[in-house]
Image 1: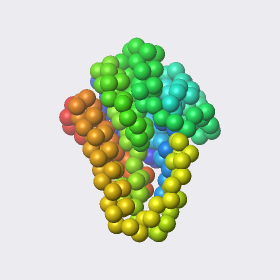
Image 2: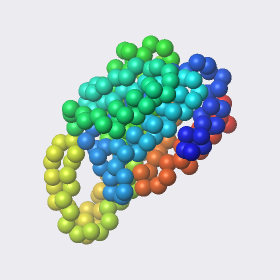
Image 3: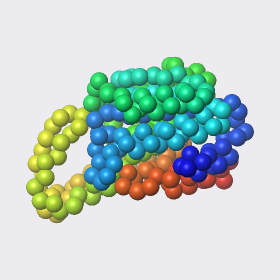
Image 4: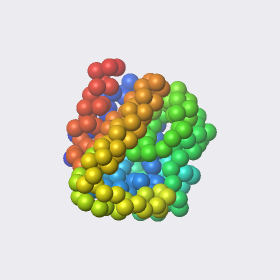
Length: 234
């Protein structure tokens, strides 16, 4: 049982802080429909949200969810109970967002307005966005904010597949790329590395935790390792 395996470190880390409010900020923008392996980012986001929601429920904590793109698509206020946790999972499974675009700033500013009491906030996204640093820093001071970063290996390194059409899930733009060209693959990796380091620097400067989840592998090890590191630190 995935929830049971996660439950011990989750409970151990937060057991001194009863009762807790857990909020799941879930990015449902167009880039979440990317996946080069068997799963899309959105699939993994839903699974992670379900694990965290049911872990909170088993701890008798309140759990809520904020589904966002470049707007607030839906806010489910925190409540206790299995029925409420199931509602969150059902919403995530079936929800069809209005917008394909992303704004982490919009989600974080809304969080700061509606959630006055300190909460544990899991921000689940691929963080393909810019200009959210200030909003993240403010939210991180008010809440125990954890970034859950969804990664796909093909975003980091292009395989030499020949001429490939790349479709931007947010803008709708399509571009043909010659992936056999070493210079193209090298530039792609350099761009990804720069963005990755920039995001890491944002979290480091804001003194916030983040866990990276590669969607082509099991997320249980990085997730449990993350909570165990927090347990040792606390």
